[in-house]
Each structure stands twice: as structure tokens, then as C-alpha cells.
Image (cartoon, rainbow, N blue to C red; front, side):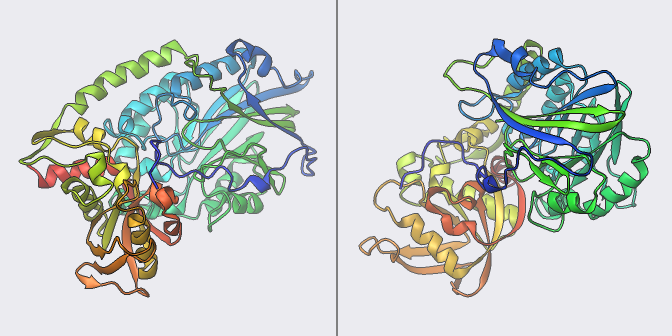
Length: 522
């Protein structure tokens, strides 16, 4: 099996497809919910598309919530995937031109996820979001990627509040603002930020050292109690699991009844038909800026009366998507700084580091081992596996720059540590050598793991010997194994790695390799 030449990322689009709900009459406030998906046919049709809501009657006020989540630093348009911030801005401005009261919200995991974001430690993303006029953002687990102190600095740079009601500093004070209140046309809207408890292990532990994570549902209840008498509309901007876990959006909706809307992130799910729990609407716009969420609300006498939820998705025709020129200018300027950073020398190698396609997909190479060793060192795992297909270039002898590492690892993968039984690890290694001697993106580049295999045997029964940390593999023992997100999602046939508890998500693979080179190849 040869890995396709595509960005490596976990896709969850179909996970909750059976939960779609639409055309539902609610009981709490007799809200009529209509849900739709908006395709882009021609950019000139924006005005028609965004006039889908009946104009409000006298005595009513219309509010539009536009929302993104889990963009993960995907700044530029990617054919068939991310729209890019410049096109998102153009769509949002089209909405603003046709509607009076528009709020732009982000549900987190925004400052991290690409080299464009990590090179400036999130600042470039803040600058772009400032230029787009965001109104509020919730802190996601990956927004802590540069340390909680840096997140505080980014919040100071932002022209909008970065919110999290349930995260406190070591001294017990709030790390970020708990909520913000926006007033539009006489309507007061309370927006509460919530961060998943999974942040404690879904970022590097050093990034959140000393922080106190309270139950987001309990904190939401407390803040709602504070706000409900002074706000007409209550929105949770929640970076929480959609269904699974103790701090899910479903539990939030079930236990905090006063919430009118939950704008969610973290699960990377495009809720094309939204979700209603306990009369509370939950929306989410997928991942990477591939979709844009739109919620139209009409209030009568300060009470929500009509809610229309939809997702905008562009029609990819091969032509460039229309962009907002002002935002594009900001992106171009940040890109110039990005280019300077890529030229920085981070290390030195006396030898050619072999990342040649035919080599990393058929045998161990020094560069493949280096990448795997970096993953193991950053996580403290028992062993690490990197699929050879994720390594896309070699590094010549001499100076090593950040650009060299980006050329080697251009896919914006991030590293996970999973708890795997020895028997599952054996299956993974069998998958990695199943196609040998054919070139295969699944071929395992490893660290902390030694294995021998017999290519004369049938695939699935080729591994002869495996050692982890110098000891014979125990099929019943649980091991801490570092892998990347592509493999964890079953990519290149590694479906067995979808199993196992996630013990940590220390960061972007490229950043981890850069740090390893800086420390070990001077």
C-alpha cells in the first residue's frame, strides 16, 4: 500500500452523521429550527445566499452568529479543503453587508497546527484574526502549545477577548476572561468560554504546568447564574468533546438549561444539520476552515423566536477563491516574516540525512531514525513509529535550516502518545512491512524499537523478533508508543492504531524535530 500524496490529518466528518436533526419544533421558547447547507455557486450570489432569513418584524431584532473552530493555523486555501482566511473574510464581509448585527466567534484550536502558526508562536494568526474583526474566541487545548504564559501574551495582542471560564493560574486567579457581553441593537449577548479537561494531557504537560482545570460544566452553570438576569441571549463558546467524555457539549446542554446556543469545537465535526439537546442548539463547523458556520437568530422582546443554522462550503472549481484584499495583505506581510524565520540555521550535519522516497519507504534510514528519535525524546515514550511516507525530502550535509525540516515534514502532522498492547504494536509493525519489497508509505521508521522480519513469509506473519527498549516484546504488556495523527487515524493501513488510550499530544512534529536538532546536532 502506497500512501497518497495528501495532507495527513484525522477526519471525523461521518462520526456523528446519524445525529443530524432538523425541522424540529422546540418546547422551551417555541423556537423553530431550520437547518441548511449553503453551497457557493458564484461569488456574486452572496447577497442572495445571505438574505435567506425573513426580515425581522417590528419589535424583533435579528442577530447572526458566524463561527469557526479547529482552524489549526491553516492560513492559505488548499484545493478541496481549507478555504484560507482571506476567502473566509470575503464570505464574512458578504454576510456583514447584508445583515446588521453580526458576531464572529471562534471555538478554539486556532493558534497552532501549521508551520505558519508555530514559527511566530501564534502571533501571525492573532494578526490575521484581528484584521477579520473577530468578536471572541475560546481557548482550545492546542492553543496552549507554546505554554500558558504565551497564551496570555497572545490574548493581550488580540483585539478580541480570548475566553476560558474554567482555567485558573497556579495562584487560583483566572488565566483568561471567563466571559464577554456584546450588545447589538439593544440585545445583550453573554458569551462564555470553556476549555476541555483533556487539555491536561492533549498538549505537552509543560505547557499547562501548575494550571487548575475546573469542570467546565460546573463553571458554565456558575457563570450563567451570574449573567442570566442581564443578558437576553446566552452562548457557550465551548472547546469540548461533542459527545464523549465527562465534559462533553451534550452534558453541558443537558445540565445548563439556560444556554441558548453552544458554538463548539474540538471534535472536528461538521454538524451540517446541527444538534439539539434539551432545547439547546449545538453547532460546529468541522475543521481547518473548510466550512463556515452561520446561525441566524430572531428575538422578540429579547426572547429567541427563530433560529436558522447552516454551514457554508465553497464550490471548488479549480479557480482561485475570491478573497478579501485587506486580509490578504496582512497574510502576505506575515508570510514575509515567515520566510525569514525559515532561513534560520538550527543545526549542522556532517553526513547526508537520507529521506529519499525509495529509501524511507523500504528500509530504515538515518533521517527516518532521527525523526522517530525526536518523537520519542519529546514524549518519553517506550518507542516511536513514523510512517516512511510522511518523510518527503533529504537534508544535505552542512547547515540545517528550518526550511530543510519543513521540506522533510510538510504535512503539519502532530505527535500523539498512545497506550498500546504489545500485540497491537506487533500488528502495526506487520502492517509496516506487509508490502515489502514494494515501496510503501507504511514502512516503519522506529526509535526504541528493534525488529527483524522475513520477507519470504506471507504478509501479516513476517515479523520474527521485536524488542522495545532493549527487552523482548510482551504481547500482553501496555507500552507507551509515540506516533503521528495520520497513523492514529488509520492512515497507510495502520487501523490497529485507532485503538488505545491517548496519553498525550505534545505538539507539531516539525517543531519537535526542530527542537531535537537544535539540542543534538550543533
